[in-house]
Image (cartoon, rainbow, N blue to C red):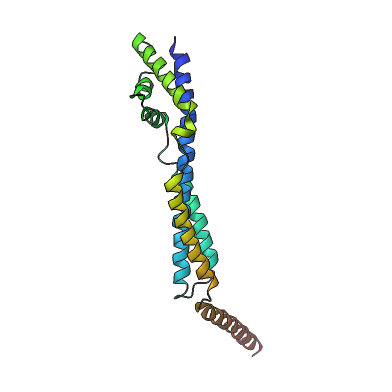
Length: 194
């Protein structure tokens, strides 16, 4: 068999593994970003109880959204290439057959063809049970994450529902700014008339 028939077949078998690895990484890192952004938002809400921070709830929500975006963006680096997908397949017990076949794609010797055929069979077996071999976060990992996120969000709700002592200071600051603007307008009118 020629190189042109084996190279695409082996690479085609690696594509769903790459996509699955990328999707799982995207979910994990976006979730970690949401947790980190939510923690930053709670810290901001707590700080807003001691410092007059205007629009703290909006900024806290923006921090959580920014955390998701940062986590999702971080999932694209480092790139998951064919070699990473082949290593993942080899961890399932193919004894480096897929990585070796990937390294030997440029050769058309009898041993290289046998190696590719063996690797393609192993890759096909791996791809048939992809959801079991590369699972979504589940069990203890997912439970721990959800408990942590629930705790952070409960803290945020408590901080939002309790009256903030800095709200009075922010209201007074806004009223004072309005008075200053009206005094400046009155002075400008006096300066123009006299």
